[in-house]
Image 1: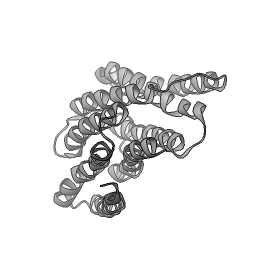
Image 2: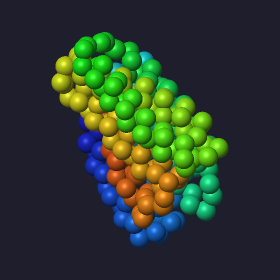
Image 3: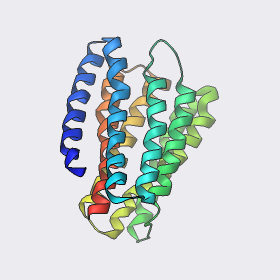
Image 4: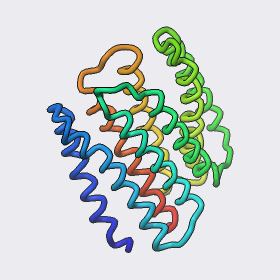
Length: 221
């Protein structure tokens, strides 16, 4: 069934480009139709991996994370309502499963300390900004940041095991996720960003796709 993967990825790219176009033109009905369809299509990838290779803990955890992300995507895409807090909760749950997945093969090397230092410095300025603008949402933002940073740390330090396609895909996905969440948070708490949903998904969708494809690469590799 993995021979279906190129078809799934091609379909995914098409609906992603259409979604970005409809979001840019503010055709909300079509945006609302395609937004959850993107994550739902991404979910097919770990399902294909599980069906072809049998149960695998890593793949199952990625599947669970994407499932929670699908719920969060539906909540956050609705421009007429403010479901930011609920969306954050589901994303936090999803990131916890990512942490569990990426930490399965965790190891430590000296350069990981540099990564931790970089994350700490960036977060110092970022959380200082959020404290000034997030108000009562600062604590949820703080918790979310700690969880996504843990996810990013384990994803990037997977490069300790080599620079294979799997390790690079997961590390790149984490970086794209960070950028996406930064755009989302600036738009939500600091100042509105024109066409923010377009920019957020420009990084978010490829990040999720890379995480999903990693389930195939990891098993096949």
